[in-house]
Image 1 (cartoon, one colour):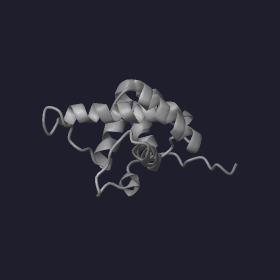
Image 2 (spheres, rainbow, N blue to C red):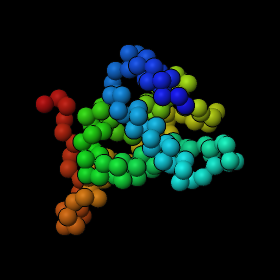
Image 3 (cartoon, rainbow, N blue to C red):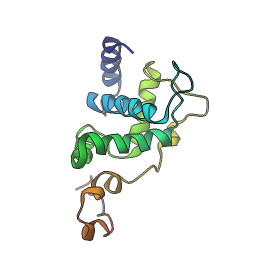
Length: 142
């Protein structure tokens, strides 16, 4: 994928759907590259299709590897607060020709993936605190 095409498409996506920062799209693209490298290819030239669940796990692994304890804060800053947001980002990219999908792929694949506290914050907590239940999310109505 050419960088200029990617940047132009992202500009169009964000103009139509400003919920997510450009960095969120770049992060998802990088995480997809990361997971495709780790799971291999169908052939030398064709990467294997990645399911929504596999992508979610790749996003979690890649985020922790790249940003460590800052992952959750960065995602929130980019407008990503739950796994369903990754689905929205992926399908925005599909709609603009940046990613492809199969007939069985759906934004539903991203629902109920994982709790962001457990996925991105708990791994960095001291053991005593990490075993405690996750705090209740702050209400956006405050």
